[in-house]
Length: 146
Image (cartoon, rainbow, N blue to C red; front, side, top):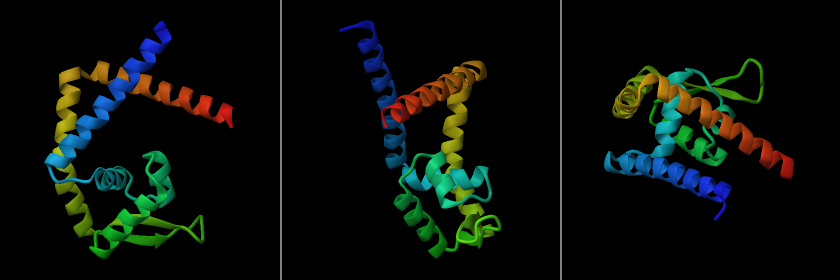
C-alpha cells in the first residue's frame, strides 16, 4: 500500500469514527441527527431557508423539508415569506420552538464544549481549518470530474 493510500484509509477511518461516535451518542440520548442539525442551524442563524440548511449542513433537501414540516406542525417554527425570493420562505423559531431547541441542543453543545476543552482551542481551531481545506479540495476534485 502506498503512503497516499495509507493516508486515505486513515482519513476514512477517522471520519467514520467521528460520525459513528456522534450517531451512537444521538441514539443513546434519543436524538435524531437531522433534527439536531436543523435545530442547530436555526439556533445559530435565526432565519434560514430550507435550501441554506440543506447546503450548509449537507443534508438531503427532502429530509430538511420533512424535519421543518414536523417542527412546524408542533408549533416550533414558522415559515415567513422571503423578501428577496417571492417563492421562498425563511424558517424561524417560535418562542416555544426556541425553548425546545435550547433543551434539545444543550447536551450536544455541552458535549462539544468538553471536546474543545480536552483538545484545546488552538488544536480545535487548527482541525477546523484543515477540515475546511479538505472539504474545499474534495469539492474541487468532484467538480473537476463533472
